[in-house]
Image: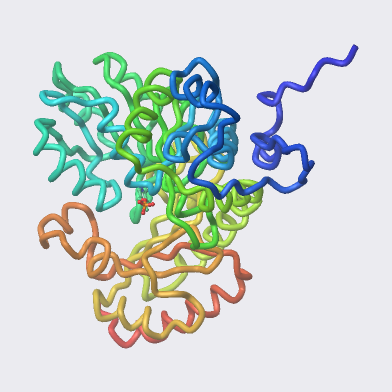
Length: 403
Ligand SMILES: *Cc1c(COP(=O)(O)O)cnc(C)c1O
C-alpha cells in the first residue's frame, strides 16, 4: 500500500504551490475565492451547534473564512509553524501579538531598527496601557541581555533591518529570550520564509506584512502571525476574532496566489539587488553601500549561514548629501518614487525625508539615516535596465559631490 505523502516533507517551492488547497466539489484547479461575510446553516440546531463549538465549521468571516484559512495553512507550512493567523495589515499582526500576549505591568524589548510605525505603536501606544518598552541596538547581544527585566515578556526584531540591512543572530537572541522566559518575535517581512526561517532558528513567533513580498505586486494590505498553537492559534487568534482586524478573503486570495511564485521571485529580487550593490561599490559618487550579499558587509558571514539568500533591498550613501540624493531620485526614469517595497516594480526612497522624516536629527544620526542615504528595493525588471536608470541618477548626483 502507498502511504499518503507527508506535506511537511515537501520542498519549500512545492509547499508554496500546493499546501492549503482543498478543492470544493466543483474540482477547481485554482484556489476558490469565498467572498462572503457569513455562512448558512441547514437548521436552527446546526446554527446553535456551530456557535456553541460542538460542531466545527465557518460562522462569520471575522472568525474564519476558507480562503483566509488556505492562505494561513500555506504560510504556516512555509515558516514551519503549527499555527498561522492572518490579519488586515502587518501592523495589525504586531498589534495582535501585543494584545494577545501582554498585560499591564509587562515589559517589551524592541530593536531600535524596526519599521517606523512599529516604533510608534510600541513606544507611544503600549505605554498608555501600562506596558513598558525599551529600545536597543539590533546587533548588540549584550545590550539585549542587559535590557531584560523580570517582567520582560517579548523581544521584537526585524532582521535584516530596513533600510540599513543590519542583522542579528536569531539563534543567539532566542537563547537570551528563553533564559529570561520571554518570547522572541521576528518580523520576517524583508527576508520572507524563502530566505530565512526564524522558527527553525529558535524564535517563537514570526510576524509578516504580507503587503510587501508575499503580495509581490503592490496591490493589497495584509499580515500574518505564525507560531505555536497556544500563543498564536489561541491567544493571538482570540484577539483577531474579537477585535476584528481580520484579513479580507479577497486579499487572502491575492496573497495565496502570491505565495506560489514567492520562491522564484525572491531569487530574482536577490539577483537584481546583488548586481545593483556590486555596481554601486564601483561608483565614485557612492560613499557606502549596505547589502548583506557583499563580502564587505560586516555581517556577511552571519547572513550566509542564517539566510538562504540576501534579499531585494540595497541602500547606499551619496557623497553629496541630501542634494545629491534628491538629484539622483529626480533623474530616474524607470524606478518608482514610492515607500512600498517587495513590488515587481523597482522602488526608490529617500529615508531621511520620508519614512524617517518624523525623527529628530539626533535620532536619525543615531539610526544611521544620513541625508545622503538612498534605498532601492530591486524589482523584477531586467537588471541591465535597472542599472541603466541608476547610471542616470548617479550622473545627476555627481554635480553635488563633495568630499
Ligand atoms: C510594511 C512593514 C510593516 C507594516 O506592514 P503594513 O502591512 O503596512 O501594516 C511591518 N514591518 C515591516 C518590516 C514592514 O516593512
